[in-house]
Image (cartoon, rainbow, N blue to C red; front, top):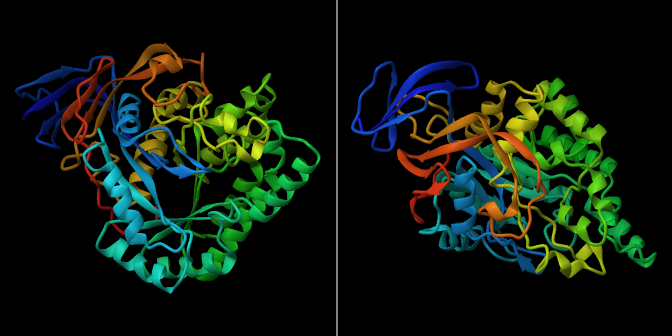
Length: 459
């Protein structure tokens, strides 16, 4: 064997046990005691996790007149330092364009630049007979089995109910999974115009323009249409009580409805929008940050199984160069925050150490469930013989004060500036290769490869 990880505590969604892990080439080939190989890593007092998977990122993405600031090089490097060994990003169809053209563009950006493995969802904004027919090619030939649509961003990304229903029907026929950004774009547009007429332009009004009740309404509508189409549905970045209540009600009736939330909704609240000056713009995201009550509702939804995934919705912008585009108009502040590097440390600290989730559930939410829902399991998302040797050696005692200057994300701030986290990735292995070790980059740009994903199967 090429590499042995010895004396560590392996953690899966169901078990926690001490054993060695043997790696040959890119695969795990043995799990047991007293394994031997040409290279050994001593993981005594460490936890051994399957590589974490982030199924919601926006790398180098055109949005609101600018681009998200992480390139495929900087974004995947930051992910690696945070313990993420695979991401699934969004290839976005242009208005009037084809899915093929979008895939070609995103392939061109990612190929040869990624430090970790990656896949793509297809974001569809122009639903017609041609693009619906292309879904079959994406699923059957390209290994892209998930498709995102938007009920928000009127005039740019938003689709109507009939287009959404047609996509649901087609995905169900082909074994694909539809993802939905569930906010009511019509009401957001109306509220935004009214607030600007009243000269309410500060960042705090971004949250006012996107009330939680209309996120809940959009979730209910999406679930109703999915039920009508007899199709599975994945609702992205849930932020509030109304959203998870809709998901809970659907799942109680046996519908294949799945949901994710993000660290920002579990740890930050709407009071950030009142930070002095223009500082609140750092937290302008969609959906916006909600109340502490909504945070508790999200944690309870995780506890009872209504939310299956924690991802980041990593969409970074420079505060000074890009967020300031909306200095006099909150509607022009690019929506998004960085988070690809801090997810695991923040969630271990806020989730496991605060007793919201067990260590096993931590692995399930951040690695195994994403792999299963998006067609990568058991290649990814588990420590098992035959799986990719994507492994994180994690020090549960290591304390770190989050500081944007010490992170690798290509932006000038982090929403968790000054937070003390306990538990941090020490060594990160991608397909058998050590890519980060004790704070040092060992991987190479271009090591990450495109992962073809299987069709959707119910979790």
